[in-house]
Image (cartoon, rainbow, N blue to C red):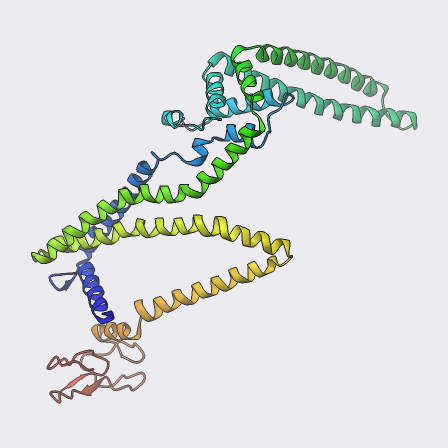
Length: 403
């Protein structure tokens, strides 16, 4: 069984690189590689569009809802500023909003909150007022910073004057006047900001959102937290199912085409379908790895790291990472050296290029010995007693295997 599998793999590899039992020409190779790249990019694009139909846990329970319900970050003292920042971030984003995002289903606890927020977000006048409120808040903070700087400069100048140092009275007077002007400007800005905040607070849509926020109780928080945990656990499996619904029919089509092309001896179609079969397997492989990453590192390994940290043994985790890196490097070196760049393949390339089979020096045609290292390039074939290359797999005179 292993031998038959190895032979099948070898035949499949030959179908990827040969046409009519001859190596692919450079032009044909470039074309087939560009086709592979085009199909691979198209598959990943289609895969993204297909899986976008699946509602993720963080779309079903959006950040706004998690902030309000789970993290309890909104309270009467900061809710207006948080609302203004959320709306301004949406309105000022350079990325065009996806209208399909508003059509995704929402958790029953989140839906009234999100709908109330969207009503505020989509009100152009109210959104502008919230943006102005943020601007006024920034200007007020800038004025406070400027006032602290002026007071510091004024205190320094006043102390120098008292100490008898050379400090002009006009400088102290100027600073005093600047402090007065800045204080007046800041108070005016604070007054206008307070008036603007009171106006927004009285808006019916804003009041509707506040009422829904205040209506959240502990039972809602507990239920939402449990639902989010359950969604996070099952979402990777559901996402993989959606991805396989897209990938497996495509793989099946390429497989049937490949099998039919081989059975009917259509070498050109067998070449292309073999490449497409490999291309279709690449995203399947990566999606399975992604599922393992979601299940293992993001859950199991996180708990392991937390356990090691609690025991003050977190260094063990880094030792394991270093060990995994070394093992991965060893595996890659073995793959490249023994499989892709093996000694057998190196010998065949040297024979084909007329190089010494021992040191690689280019030799004149039919040279028996290497002029650099003296290695004999030929041996006597056991089947026909003619000379053939020492490391040739088959006799160049009779074709008998060297094994």
